Image (cartoon, rainbow, N blue to C red; front, side):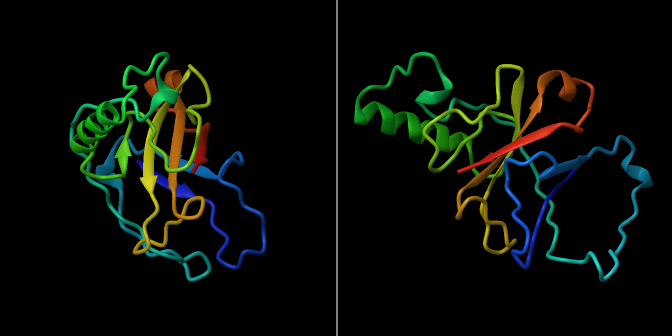
Length: 157
């Protein structure tokens, strides 16, 4: 799967991470037919990267993602954060619960949606989401089951 985000290097248009079409995905069932191709100069910009994932467990990021948050003391919250951080050796991950920096709500669009990918801002890759926060990409569960990536949503913060 390849993910693409809208970009305006000159800042002349008003791109917004919540706009429809801001995120675009291409899913390739047969990767044996893929051939690396250099883009034409008119569209060559930035760089790409490969992200390798490993299997792990995930826990809700914060109290906004569960009905009742059982960790009421600072000590319990710190222990929970330590456990969740131990499961996430990277801030870029597939599926799981979306994590964020500054949002005070669950960014998931609704109960029929699931977090597809969470990406942290990265200076080396020239990724900056919402002033250095995280970009979260969501897909409807039924579309994911069908490998239909035509309707993605995103949130940042």
